[in-house]
Length: 259
Image (cartoon, rainbow, N blue to C red; front, top):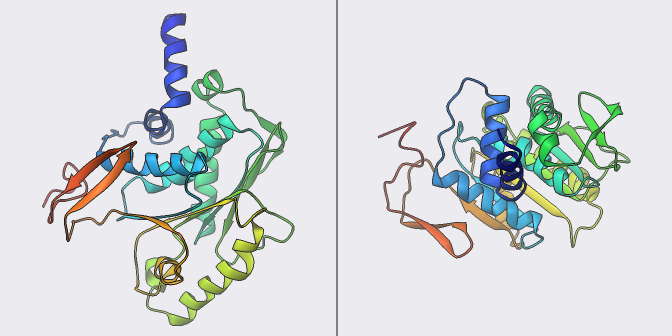
């Protein structure tokens, strides 16, 4: 690749988050085929609205195997830290193995040659554990689980990626425990409840799951709802003043799961 082409690619990766997601996918899922779809554009655009400070409370609901974790828990923290090496991010999942896998993938991206060609952000080798790494500018990505300890830790961005495993959905006790931990432990970790960002991305599992609870509270949540099959017509925001129209019955990802 010529120096000019490399510069052009680095500029693209710094400014086009969909392209960054694709490069992230190729890094953490080698050998698999990335299938660009409009719903990836929708997720990317809404995450960028959070990064720009235009949205501070975001819910994204979609079915499994839709690249939600690569977009929100792997690519987005790496992209944000690339632009703001001092950002402090808390990433939460229901299981430790899941949380740590996302952390490893994010670290792999940030330590890759292509990332370091595009961004000046570097991980501090002296503060680089399995669950948490810091940048040389004191930024941080911390991985934890629902119910995990966050004493003394905080951040400007919280990402909740799958708050509950499907087998727990029928348990009222488990659902209540998740909601209580969210209110008493997680939200209090924001540096500023007014200005900082919370992103919740998950598969809907129960009417009284975390998403149901948050929507019922009446707070100002932006909700990107991407059901596997559209029950009603939808106009989905995928860019600045750009929409994708879904007719009732449209499949989210027909190339992967046709009717």
